[in-house]
Amino acid sequence: MLRVLVVDDNFDTARNFYVSLRSAGHEAEFAVNGYGALEAAHRMRPDVVLLDIGLPDFDGCELARVLRRVPGMERVRILAVSGRGRAEDRHRALQAGCDDYLLKPADPAEVERLVALQR
Image 1: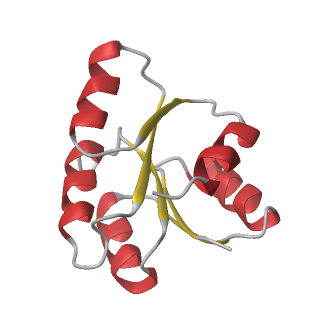
Image 2: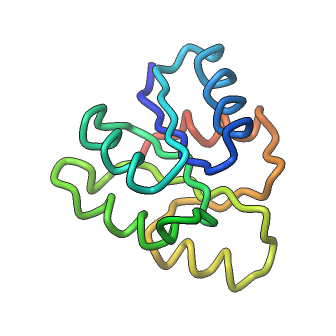
Image 3: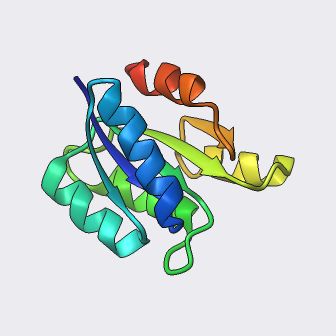
């Protein structure tokens, strides 16, 4: 069982990922903004973060960089999720430290496959 933090400003999307991950046997929490994600990350110490890069209060790429600097979270697996399919958005997310880039709507089976990969 992995600890997974879902970060998405769309409540329904966050909740759907949360339910899917819990159904797959993972411990999961979700946050609907960047500052809530930081608080949850410090508290739960996730193994994986499913991160919307288009957050209204915190740039998702910058949030990935911040998470990487939290002691003990240097190796957390960060999966960027975005509705933007431009190559420069993917490149920017990967440069920020994300391990992979998924387009919304993300296939639940693909999300589970990527979540299950360990760094």
